[in-house]
Image 1 (tube, helix red, strand yellow):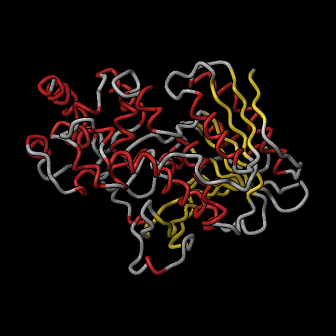
Image 2 (cartoon, rainbow, N blue to C red; image 1 turned 180 degrees about the horizontal axis):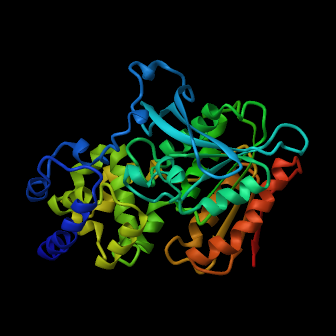
Image 3 (spheres, rainbow, N blue to C red; image 1 turned 45 degrees about the horizontal axis):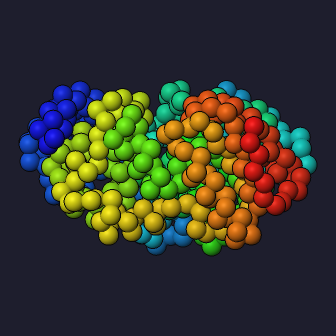
Amino acid sequence: MGITVRTALVLVAAAALLSAPTAHADPLGDLVAPPSNPDAYLPAPLGDPFFTPPAGFEAEKPGAVLSTRGVAVQPGTTSTQVLFRSTDSKNNPIAAATTVIVPDAPWTGDGPRPVVAYNEATDSLGNACAPSYTLPRGTNKEIDRVDDLLGRGYSVVVTDYQGPRQAYSAGIVAGHTVLDGLRASGIADDAPIGITGYSGGAIASGWAAQLAPSYAPELDIVGVAFGGPPTDYTILQRSLNGGIGSGLFTAATIGLSREYPEMRSLANDNGKRLALIQKDQCVDVLSYSGLLLFDQQNLSNVPNVFDHPITRAVVEENRMGQIKPEAPVYIYQGIQDFLIPKEGAEAVQDQWCAAGASVHLEEVPGDHTAAEGGGRPGAFDWLSQRLAGAPTGGCERVIR
């Protein structure tokens, strides 16, 4: 099996290297003899000095603004990108970026203009895949969702929640950066705040909801609505690994290893080669690689890699549902979603409700793609009600 995997990696390596944002000193040499330094598997820098934090930024408080610049995103709005201080999965200081989009038209509702943290399903490993890169270039794949929120008069904060390492699927850093992006936005001080996202964006939204009470208690978060949440790697191992979703599962594993470099010790040379090949790739390419049906066991140098203490500790630390959110939550989930099965959303609702949280779970017809289109309108309407001050409470599960 090792030869088969290596052959598959060679077939995709050339295309990946040609599409990389920057050239490596010896890319072919690295594929022949994968380096041991975890930094070799981080995304290539964009060469944009805006993303380089000033010396000593680590001493600033989470959410502190490090630099700003104006950008053009959508007509009829004023947009600003902010580099801010945040915290990674191991509570170390990092610098992350967010894009703040404010409608030019005055807010006509009661009170201050509401703010929504919209978390795109970035699901990617490269810096050129992040919203701060795609939004000003008109290539963002979820701009229609942002437009929906802007059309309701809300300010929208779109954070690069995967952090500077593009740590796809890492929950703690995602929650930290979403909350710090709101702090750094400068528009959320006295405004009601909503948080939303789907799929990968649901990771960021759910983790922001449950970390907010301890990490950013001053934020007035009135509702969190997300859908198709990947909540537990134990579930995703069964639904994605070795199947058509294996490209995303492999990318998520690579993303986690950027926050937990101890995971790199579990990868064999083929696993390291794949991490090099995919390190700057965006979601579509990652999805196509699922056609190769990668099994993480065949990319590992230890038996029963999913039972290894390192794996089990990282998976448990990134399992959503263990901390009670204070804000009410709305979850929507596809009943026929075979990639992100409904048992994950159901388990989170059960655990949060047992702790006393308010969680509405809406199970809608369709697979992962169809459920997003079918469930989002109801989620956005629910969020709008919370932003308007309408009360809600309790737990219920509705099957459509």
